[in-house]
Length: 126
Figure 1 (cartoon, rainbow, N blue to C red):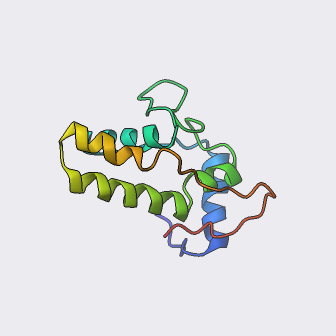
Figure 2: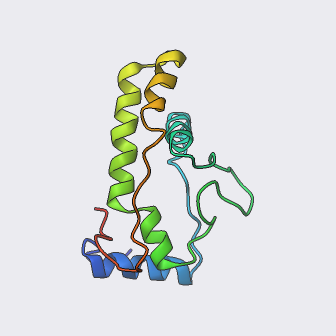
Figure 3: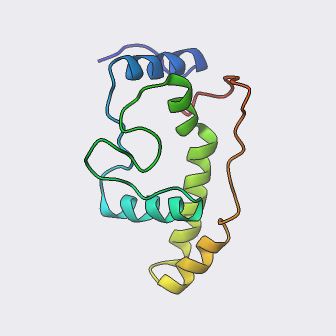
């Protein structure tokens, strides 16, 4: 148990540093079938490979935490917010595959703009 307040950018970066140093496993979804479905729908709409279950490779990034800056970017607040906004839109259309496909088309051209200057801004995704 850690008694630290991780909800600052500095502590969030420390969390990623510890995770990389210890090579903690990166779980790509919560584990339920609904999360697997919604995560793969979101990935498809954003041109990201499907979740890989097991093995040494991941659908997005590395299987284990390895680089604090890269790991933080993969879990940034912008990425989390975009995922849930798109998942909510998909939930509104329900299980109808035709409607889900049409909704996913809306997101096809959207990509997260990432800073390439190495700056660390807004790492805290709480």
